Length: 282
Ligand SMILES: [Zn+2]
Image (cartoon, rainbow, N blue to C red; front, side):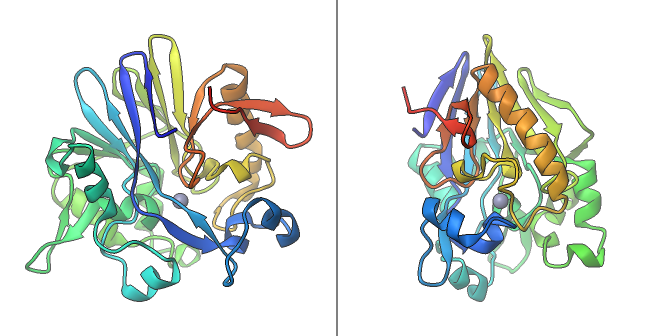
């Protein structure tokens, strides 16, 4: 399922580009023999992933959550991660009749390249430019500070080309903790994967959908200890993930998974064996 209507909101998952990532990186401390049963790796130990961006149409606005990896990554990185050529997000938006200038707001859940890379591009003169030139972009203050901190432990995690042009073009709004973007759509800092990662709750007419960001990248990451090696604060993820997934399951909310190549919009239930499981589509 790639599309759902909740109340007055139309939600569509739009791919920001498929990719492959090292299975060991994606499952942290989980032994290969366990994760490989669920996500079959290729000959180079990589698993298939998508970058599931969410296009949100409200009665008064058009917005986007995350932007995929964009078109700036060097050839070596693109090859290693089997990334698509060109600008897959823009192509896929065009396929549903949306152009970059149609967007009013963009939420970046965090500033890693596979979420923020699609927010900027290089123009014909070689200058970095925002892609969504009319849109206000929302980032958590903690995330912004960490991404620009230059701290040695974040080396390689952030590329300022992905997000500095937003500030230079005055399209950036930094937010703290909980922040309402438009009526019914609220971001909330969750920490864990990065200190300033935010998830997004979308509520309309008593229905709720939650874009969980990399708190839970795929349906293979529902268990609290199945966290990525990329998590900057894995113990925080282990604590907050069951709380948030529990709320989604118990309150029959809809969940959007940011990297699952198949299960993109799902419902959850608690499970004795695996803590949570995805319900079959209705
Ligand atoms: Zn990610």
